[in-house]
Image (cartoon, rainbow, N blue to C red; front, side):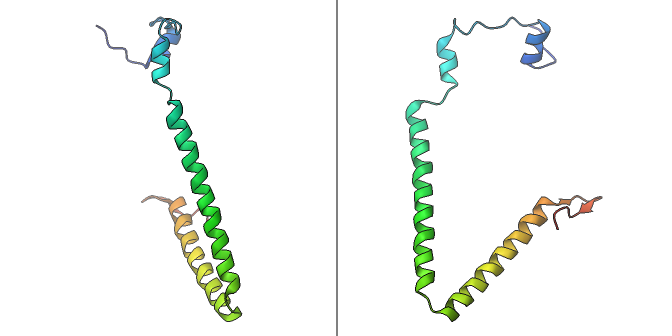
Length: 107
């Protein structure tokens, strides 16, 4: 059997491989798809995760509003500092830090 040097799609376009009739193998096309219960479970997990995130942010907002003004300012300063550090690290990772081309595109 000859091994083809290009991938199957290119061989099919070149005419080296016959196009498969999908109606002849309906089960094979179904096996490549995700089953319905797994898809529904995945969607529910994503929705529940988002609901939990919104609830946590809401409870955190309520907690912040119950603090006194000086404690709120200290907490705000801490969060801004942490966010700035995380932003700098993520922007450094986005830059091109290769050996011969140390460019920082985003900073």
